[in-house]
Length: 517
Image (cartoon, rainbow, N blue to C red; front, side, top):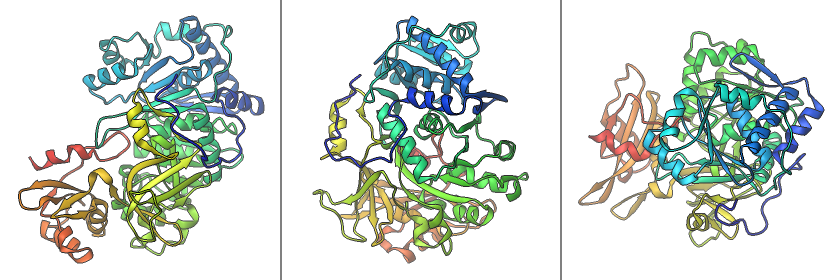
């Protein structure tokens, strides 16, 4: 499979030493070292590594007999379940690529992505099957007789192992600011990610990791492969619910997990929450916007585990910079500038903030984050032009604008596509959002530009205030004027009960204008 050529060029950052550069080899090593250890806990069922390897071998044999092999695509659309784990690993064994599709996608969007990826077959739960069939796909439904027959197929007749450069996942970007693109991730990229994650997040000899974010998301899908490297245990929740999350963490003695911004407050506010119930947690990884610093500080005070803020993209298989547990321990309060940063580059990733001419910025100067790493995409599926535009001299151009301080800590100020140009002055939404989020009554905020006949564009702020808050639009605008300047002061402030979001909590920025109607 060739998504759009190899854009990497030369000199990618070396990953920490890894045990394999093929997903099937990771699984084989895990079975060899801990065959009776639980590989996956999902829906009340525990599957050992030996059992998982058997299931994967049978499903891979069934797929091979069905004529599916290297370079083919297999769509997966379902709520979190063991189906994802089985299909991701079986496809990896035969050199096929999985295309995870979000259950919440509208039928028309499913049809568009299916038309783009052209999968040969699909796996789905009952709720997700209809849209795939309507798009013309042959669908195997989880728990159906056909699915049972596939898992009962005797293992054997498998093809030779795939190549490290073969694509194992095609993950469509969330499209919060534009049309989704299919990010092609190879065996080499996801196995490098496994080694880099284990080092950066200081995995122990046996991690128990809880996934509550959707398995169609890059970081969760890649974690399926990461957990193999070291034969760790993966606890999968069908969906996030704060009480169930607390119970799962306590029951399975979870050591590490990831949450998204909208989940932080729900956990801490839940009647079942207590630090004692989460005593097994060693590390809580979160990815969040600068506006969530109050929630993060509250989390730091309430929990006894280390916190780890990761920044990354689908194109980098997740985290490339981190505000580590040590960084969090050194924070002085919610207004500490470091809390608003994305930390520093992790081992195995080179991260440089650059000017438009490619030169490195000075301390405090705004530029674009660029990344070079072994865990990077092969390209965008079927889009050579977009792939070539995403790289310069082997470095990925992220589109994220940021500053870096003298110690290497990076702070995002916005997306290059989101800059508001008002009267010839560049206004960075993230800077305005940080100023507004400093108010204790602000739960979340999004700043965006709207057309203006005099200024070209002017900033508008959408604010989600705390229940019972007396916050007024003038208070918000004055806060920005006091902390930044009057040019950045929102010309309009709208209050919302919640924002349109993706499944992983990101605000759908291209829908923000609808809030003004």
